[in-house]
Image 1: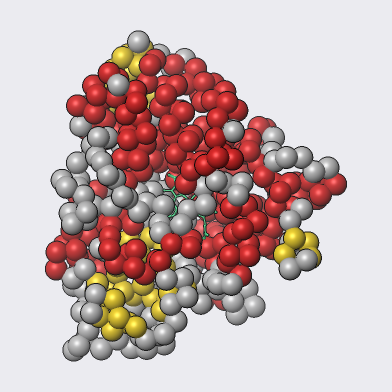
Image 2: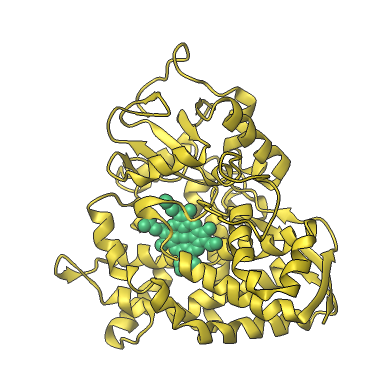
Length: 433
Ligand code: HEM
């Protein structure tokens, strides 16, 4: 950001709170991160974080303010700057290897009006609830296979590693038309893509590098492109009714979709489409273990499963932030935001906002209404939200009748990330019905 923010007249967030919100490690501990968000909502709902090495940023923590910023895609752009918060050195590295541009991936997230709408409409019908519901039987077959696999463990397993990670990946890859033997490669690439700050998910050569995030992103995007170039060429020659064929053969302004934009689309869907869903699924089970009255209720009444799905997504909020930048001087909550200043949209905080959610930290599958913003809001609102909810509903419908009880068999572990992620491990002990 070019402007220097003036501490005399502007709300500067205390250093310890600002560091917590930005540091990937904070997101491994609920008490730390949700404590900081609560402090902000109570004391400085719209404040400026000034952490050395990072651009100064407005931190947006209230549900209403997040919606206000996100609904206005012209006043608040995604991508005049990086739509994801990384340190300044990483942004500089990205520009250096990318011809001066921050747009390392030509996906919807990096687009603003009018370009964004022209690309989003290519697939928006495909993702509508009516169209997605036709996939129910196909997805149910995958869910049953995953449940059979879980039950083959002898009453104890890691719910994430042995179960939740694989099913959403299988779903999205099946809908894409990617062969099952390539799934491990996709899983690894996605984990590297989102786990840039987590030592266990970094590429080995990145461990000691100061611009680790940008380098790892660039490397995994290159790998994705190599992989998808081949599939794309195949679908142009032999189109099927899968999602990859739809994108590969689509046209923009009368011409075939350019290579970078096609690949950006594939990478966005491949990556956004499973880490998020697997984290919410694991969170749904974890929430019921911590608040067991929910388990009893949903076992007695499976019609509560859609409520379980929504609450799991709210409570876990697997997307931690996206960035916006103001395109003109404006005001939010009475604060003067100047053109080109950056805002960090904190979805987990909006989803624990006491002004909207009673007893917000509590996991409650009967919460109604549940107007969470875990899928964002406005023109960029999650393209895959109906698919995510459908696959989670089917999974719980298939899983719950087979489990009589479930309990924690160790401490859950979370991925170190301030962007997308959640559970790394959720050890459980279960009894079959
Ligand atoms: C965008 C969350 C599942 C594809 C987003 C955004 C969020 C989000 C917060 C940004 C919204 C904004 O900027 O306002 C989630 C969560 C999921 C999930 C919590 C699961 C529980 C999926 C799935 C897919 C998907 C299953 C695809 C199959 C996308 C795409 C975008 C997006 C392509 C970019 C949309 C745009 O910029 O126009 N998602 N997502 N997501 N999501 Fe999801």
